[in-house]
Length: 131
Image 1 (cartoon, rainbow, N blue to C red):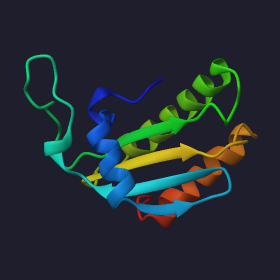
Image 2 (tube, rainbow, N blue to C red; image 1 turned 180 degrees about the vertical axis):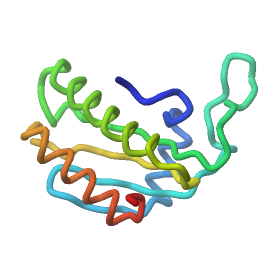
Image 3 (tube, rainbow, N blue to C red; image 1 turned 90 degrees about the vertical axis):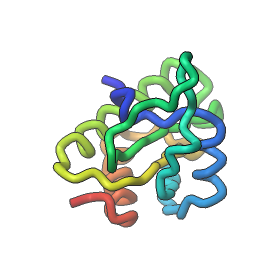
């Protein structure tokens, strides 16, 4: 299952903010970027109003390059796997930090799913986002 809309991060301004201001945490298979949220950068909806968010909510984006795997089916499966894992991690927490996350998989990261999820948890703990 994918992340709920209230937890998704979209729009080039948000990604630019994460790339410029985000603190990086490196793993073997992925890179985690963490930055404080900035509601002014959120993408506007059809009516021109800012997307309504819950106060102190965590927003997450997962980026999987074509260099990770040639086939889109495999990349989408990895994206769904990470979305579901992150959704379970952050919905289970009673207090959400006001932070944005960007997870980028490195080329060749189509390894064992258990290893990817283990590394994701390790990077979240390193970033101070695991209980």
